[in-house]
Image (tube, rainbow, N blue to C red; front, side):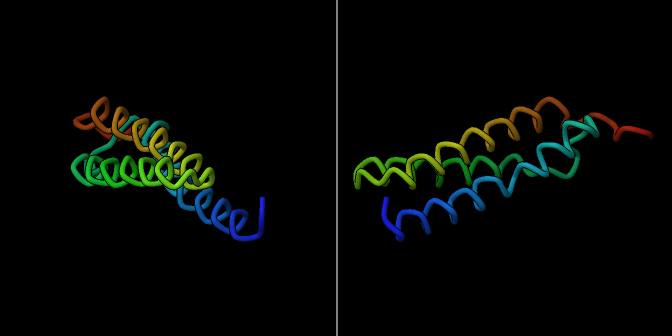
Length: 91
């Protein structure tokens, strides 16, 4: 793995993990009142295209980090649908 691939992997990990705090917050609060499912679905479409692009280029950092990002995004969509109309915890 060369320096450019390491840079791409680091960037991808940070980008892919950016949604994790929202997943944790939504899970703990058992509420997704302010979460836009449409935005997440549009993001998923983009991530899928990135994975396909990575596969076509045979670029492992793009494939791995965007696959992880897709998994986190799918988790957030599932939580968003599950808790969309739930009252916030503590209310």
